[in-house]
Length: 114
Ligand code: DGP
Image (cartoon, rainbow, N blue to C red):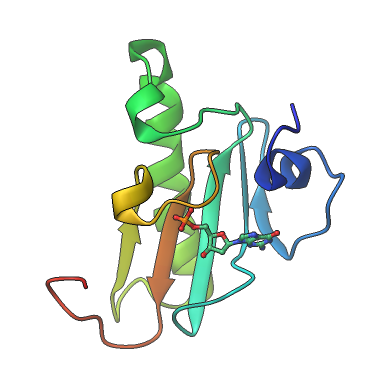
């Protein structure tokens, strides 16, 4: 399914700097990084927003977070610390309507976020 730019990346139709992939997920570096390490983890399944996640996606969402922790380890930010986040809809700043988990690290993070 290639309805969004991330669908096209998952399908191999658009290039990305892929750091991890398996049957269910693809992870690649963000084009406009907001931290020294900024990676997006997406399910291959084109779920548009967190609001659209269904009970049958529970295992997939678990895999998304397990992959994020593995990638953080791989990127050398697991111990120093990193942030994972999902923007849902316009007020949160979601711009690509294919569910994606941001992994940000390599610098101190502010809280609360702006
Ligand atoms: P969000 O605002 O949560 O929807 O984040 C979308 C992110 O996707 C944003 O940080 C920029 C990134 N992005 C948008 N288009 C592309 C692309 O074509 N390739 C890559 N690697 N990242 C993209």
